[in-house]
Amino acid sequence: AQSVTQLGSHVSVSEGALVLLRCNYSSSVPPYLFWYVQYPNQGLQLLLKYTTGATLVKGINGFEAEFKKSETSFHLTKPSAHMSDAAEYFCAVHRIGGSYIPTFGRGTSLIVHP
Amino acid sequence: NAGVTQTPKFQVLKTGQSMTLQCAQDMNHEYMSWYRQDPGMGLRLIHYSVGAGITDQGEVPNGYNVSRSTTEDFPLRLLSAAPSQTSVYFCASRPTSAHTGELFFGEGSRLTVL
Image (cartoon, rainbow over all chains, first blue to last red; front, side, top):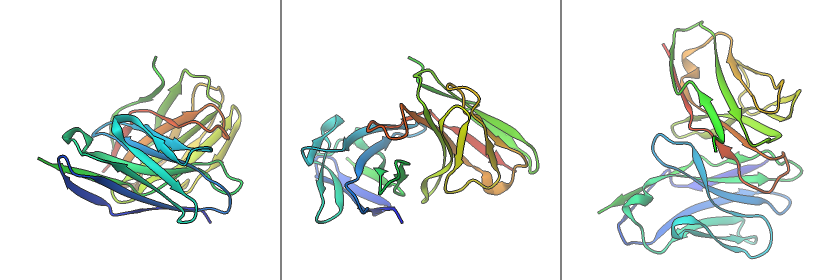
């Protein structure tokens, strides 16, 4: 069975503070890992992805994520939160085992306080 | 570039009514899919298609039908709407089912069933 787990349905930070959104997956083969962001009343858009190569990947708006095989994790971070980062964030696995059908986590709502 | 276009953006139905959510993409993508988004549940796959004439069920297919007569279009049909189908629906596509790139999403269709 394939699964993607995002810890915390809501994460609240102050503007300027570190952002850490957690994602763990289960897979029997190296997965393709993605983070998407959804702003209010919009569709999802790509934030960053890992397929092969360097395990630390950088995305848009200063976000980055590190693929850690030993921990089966792909946590999303940003050193300093901005008010405009307030959105819903989804971790997704685009390859688990022999399946290329994307599976999404339940999402984490990032709240940024002034 | 239009990308993925969904219509309508909003719809209110009465229980038992039927309707079709339209999805069209102009990127010549072989892979298209429909998700529903509900609070706390993330995105759940309803149906997907890996090419014209080929469709398959996702995680939550009951109550929905799809067809794929052209590469560009992938309509989602509700034959007899139920209140449990109140949700936000997203259409998404990518070049092929095994592609390492991201999914491209439409802006969503918000459906309310009374």
